[in-house]
Amino acid sequence: MTLMKKMLLSLAVAVASVGVVVGCDTDQPATTASPAQPTAESAAALPSTLFLKKAPEGAVEVAAAKKSVKPGDDVVVRGRVAGSVDPLAPNRAILTLLDNGVPTCEKSPMDKCPTPWDACCESRETLQASTATIQIVDSGGKPIKTTLRGLNGIEPMKEVTVVGKVRDAGGANTLVIDATGVYVKSS
Image (tube, rainbow, N blue to C red; front, side, top):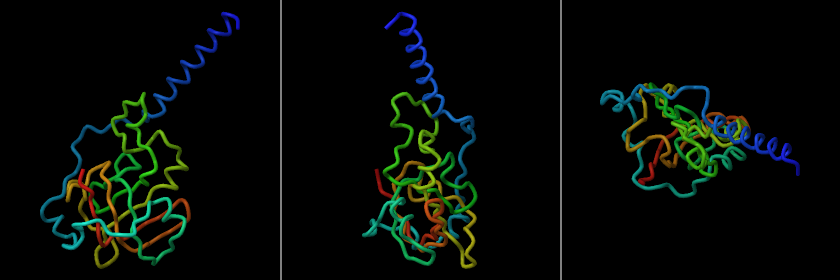
């Protein structure tokens, strides 16, 4: 191999490496504001039986559930609070649940991502096939007006198991579950 070819190959490898590092560092700047926390009043609106003391049996991963459930099905799914920059809604009892099989960005040796839970190193297709929207709804079917952040230890990257009923199942792209029980795995 000539010296010129070696230099071009080295340059190509260097550019590709920079692309990988930049690829995981999204165009969106990390937020510096403190995340929303529930008030005592808003948290009181959640059902008193919501948080479970032990993990329910029969849980399946999110990606497997998406392949087999339909609206109205009772389900038990397991995953991590992850899959987006803000997997915990700031003003509604909604979270994004990511299949445990999907690596998050802290596992990338070259990544210094400030939000590793967003799994931005994964393709959009992988994230769509591996995430579910979990919501706690009121008697009218609307998400309760509080954040789940901090309640019973819920934070990004925490593993949770959810018991609920499928509200919407649109194949590989959509899974919305109205949760009736949430178990937060302790570290």
